[in-house]
Length: 186
Length: 186
Length: 186
Image (tube, helix red, strand yellow):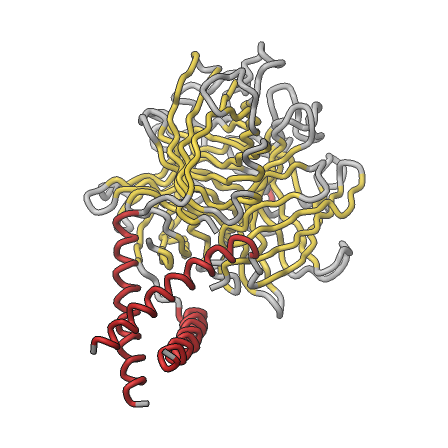
């Protein structure tokens, strides 16, 4: 019995050691448990594209209208969107879901946005939602936002999404590439 | 000593095996560590119900006003709300807290919303806040959003909330039933 | 072999016991794995402070304008902000980042807000973003919101932030102190 106790103690120490090393390894490495790359396409209503538009400006500071983006880096504009999601960078590819939510322009002297939105995926490959939130400094090549939760195939998932402006046409069409890396997959 | 080492190794293998099975079991089962069902009641300001209203339209696309919901499935409307929360489906039951935040209508051809809100609970049973975010396709019987965090009794909690439209009267009163399942309880 | 099996069983029981106690201990204690205190400074545009303003009202209920906060506890106002973050309570200290996002006033009879915002930190000490969401009952001395995610130095972090109104001048300048406690640090 004495021996078996000492063995348990030994094991316990060993287990503590294992936990601490595995935890410090996690700090360095962060291998994602799931990855996914998708594109979404934002067509902002400009007063002349009602049929095609997938987003509309719904709020603006006093003195601005909501048909064109406000001057001075669009500071204060809030846009609501329902954008098609595709597997590749072609707007006309069959959509695998919709990106729904809002962005707002929040700086006076450069272009930065703040995002709160959801990917609603509905395809043979993926069923469920992914919820995103974060700052989007548009002039940077890549911007990291948080994946704060999910449902369906993405039940309780968390991770980081890297957003890139893949293409744009004036201030009407924006194509965003989203590289999702999930680190908490359940 | 040789024996005890081999036993530790054996145990280690056993432990790895346990971890992997328990992790794959978690993927299938997901038993909630806490459950809660609450109702909240949304009365939208329509220009004539100032005293009773708990929500107001505060943003709309150019060409719409903010007293009535915009045409075409209310696309672009943002509403801000402070709704009473009750334990049952009766608007006049004593409130156990307030649901506070915003929703926005984000599609042109059907009714879908996007939600960001907080349950502020203040009763003998529950003290604390629960934070929600997600897409709300209103025409579906049930809609799943993420519980992304909490404070007080819901410190660091995460989970999934299933929202159902329990009742509505025209476009003024909506009663929502929220089935919360927490899977990360701390 | 029989002995070693019984030992493994014994250990297994011991391990289950350890897990359960450590989990119940976690419920009581919650020692943060990281702490951070920062200040941010919100100067609301009032029609006369365009150069200095860091926030603007961009949405309001029908009948209100967006230059001054709406009557009745500002119910329905949404403000968009890009506020400097400092290490101490001095507006003129060198900023270590920007607080970007939105708040909305959501009650009719008192002052409460709802917050969705990001700390974008860019200093020698901290690089990365922290994402916040929650209710902000302004009249309370302290208000707890959720830290729902992070990137960079705050990769995948979660926690609770306690917000305090450190100072204010009329309805134009607000200084907020944010005590961040992270409990999930990666």
